[in-house]
Amino acid sequence: MATGAERALIERLARDCMRLDNSALTTDIFQGVKTGADQVFKLRWMGANRYLCRPDRRSEFEVEIEDAIMHPILSGPEAKRYVAPSSDVRLLFPYSRSGNVVRLITSETMQSDFPKLGII
Image (cartoon, rainbow, N blue to C red):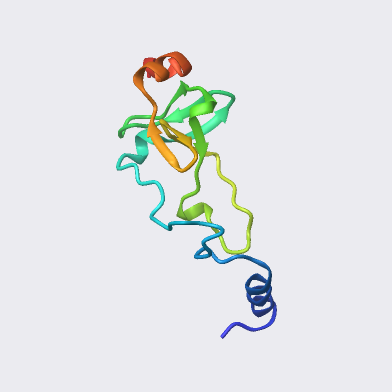
């Protein structure tokens, strides 16, 4: 049903890009990150190791967290058609990845590698 520029884009994507169900690109498609407590795990990046936090209905406050454990995340409002996404929201993601295996970072590693998390 698309015409003009939209149709041309759809045809180009079909011709030049791999589909998400291509086994060379991905082995599994699943729901993305679901924290159950976005107000705790999603923080607004303010600058190097600085984040705005609002874990409950109180006012926001700034916290220091090592950037290495925070990862950019996009939610619905930031995802727009045909526009490169950008967001200042970061996700506290206490997991490490080795190949296709993702594991919770041990408390010992958290204390040694991310000591600022212990004082929040």
